[in-house]
Amino acid sequence: AQSVSQHNHHVILSEAASLELGCNYSYGGTVNLFWYVQYPGQHLQLLLKYFSGDPLVKGIKGFEAEFIKSKFSFNLRKPSVQWSDTAEYFCAVNARMGSGYALNFGKGTSLLVTP
Amino acid sequence: KAGVTQTPRYLIKTRGQQVTLSCSPISGHRSVSWYQQTPGQGLQFLFEYFSETQRNKGNFPGRFSGRQFSNSRSEMNVSTLELGDSALYLCASSQTGGSTDTQYFGPGTRLTVL
Image (tube, rainbow over all chains, first blue to last red; front, side, top):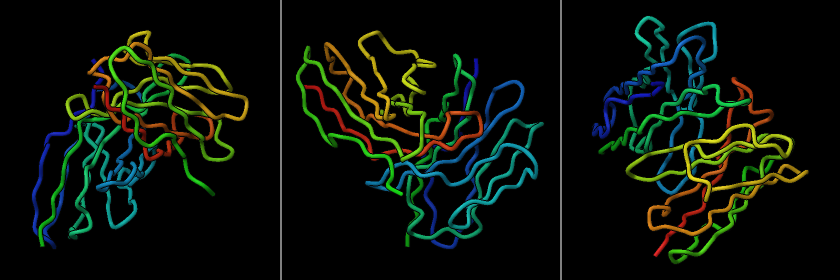
């Protein structure tokens, strides 16, 4: 079955620590991949996206993600987290459905950054 | 440019009632998608509309329905509410709903069913 898996459900880091959130997908063919973030009390926002080309994509607020086709992975990274990065992070695949497309999300990873 | 707006932001209903939620997409966006977010199931796709036509639908019962108007605004309706329908309902818009389109999300409508 087509799915998106996020391995870490809850992550706690200290400020300045490095972050890597795992995302694996099981889809055949071309995939369009997204990372969204939901800050406390705010709506979902796009962090970054990958369609083709350079597998290392950079997003907002210093985030980046690497697409590794052979591993069906699209892991999110940030070299040094800040308290303001506390949020829930969602990986998603934009998958063909019917005559359109729909985002298929992972279950999310809740990140808490402590001072 | 104004973002996606959803009304109302909060709703409290009782079992058996019906509810209508509204979504206004970003100006110029013609595709509107709806998602349900719950702690247990996460974010699940409900349906997507483009040019007043439903193009796809997620795995939800027929009690969940929607429509889109000529100005791209969309509504979703849930009839015969059940306790399990309590959730945050998110609307997202994109230009055409294509494979590489970015979906922009609204703040959501928090529905509580008592």
